[in-house]
Length: 202
Image (cartoon, rainbow, N blue to C red):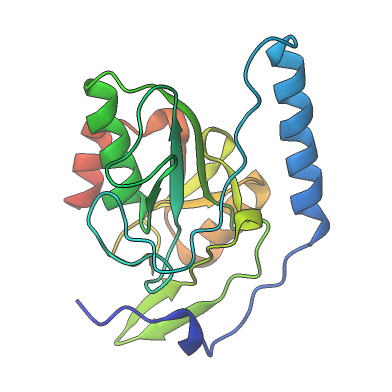
């Protein structure tokens, strides 16, 4: 596998995104949480910044150095090894989802899952040794609710460890990405351990 490009090395085209989308989506999530909570549930934890040399809880790779989407999981009664919530990841296909499934089998309850939202960031694409990679983003404001995302899979664009799930909060953005780069879309609920095993073996 070629060396993963670093954020500082992006030189190809930038994809413009509406900056207002982020504020609207966060407002909607907050309003929904308020409606569902009934005034009694714990407030939903906010995503955190994943910069600063944090190491992926699934594989130990440094977050922010490699291409592709990042993620974080908050748990109700458990914490990841070595630090407080959330657990954090530099890839979804080989990091966040495998960790989530493994710990769900162990009885851990995830309260909130965040992933990079490519509908709300100015992402960039870079081609290196005939493979195209999508930029990585670590700021707290670059994350959105994983369960509400539309994920592009099987496209010709890779994350830090190869094939990944590229999340968009706006379904039209996901469809446009598929039109340009191939692939198809899935929802959060479509992603099972069995599905993921098959995806990574394609």
